[in-house]
Amino acid sequence: MTSKNTGSEWISISDMMAGVMMIFLLIAVAYMVVISKTEKTLALQNAELKELNKQMSDIAKTHKDLQTELFNDLVNEFSKNLDSWNAEIDADNTFRFKEPEILFDQGKKEVKDRFKEILDDFFPRYIKILSQEKYKDDIEEIRIEGHTSTEWQNAKSLEARYLGNAELSQARALEVLKYCFNNKAIDKDKEWLVSVLRANGLSFAKPLESPELSRRVEFKTLTKSNQKILKILNVNEELSDNNSTKIERD
Image 1 (cartoon, rainbow, N blue to C red):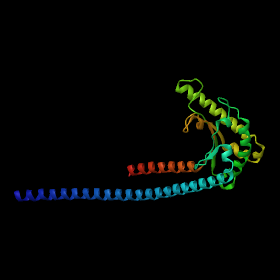
Image 2 (image 1 turned 120 degrees about the vertical axis):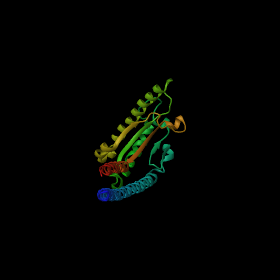
Image 3 (image 1 turned 180 degrees about the vertical axis):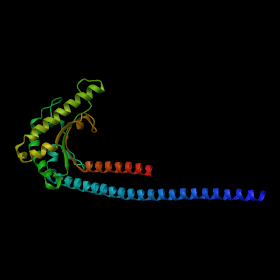
């Protein structure tokens, strides 16, 4: 009798162990399936990220080549004028007029006669370069920037000095834009300039090494490469979020 009961108990334990092993086997198979799906997802994500990386590298190279070519064109065109205009061209293609006595009277926004003469010569030649086919479609903005020193009349507080100079620098940049835009020599490019020409007053946000040098007007060309890179970064972010969500669901 005892022998029969022992046999029955042994059969029950064997069945239970077989069931447990089957459960572990199913868990292992399910885990392998999940791992396989995850590996495929990560491989796909990696390939997409590599493609985005390549696109960003291509844009960066194109931007660098474009900047270099534009710099060379500007230097070739204006190198003989820079000393007499007291101007300079930076490697980032910022064209800087840095003689405050030529530009404006102190505290005033009206463009002085000498600066008008310079702009009459400079601006049509500048636009002629930028409106070439190799540059035109890649230009996001042609920005006229007004800059000041940190000084403002007898103001003592930071707020008074900053806001006073912000108003003055914006007014000066706008006066330069208005004068340049009314130049008849650029009539054929005016429709395009409406979409890209801007006036910005920066107060003393970007001072140079002295108050005199800080009082200046700059012409800057911004290309669309930044927009393209930001677009790729946004796609990359969306891709990462989607893949993370997919992995969590799997």
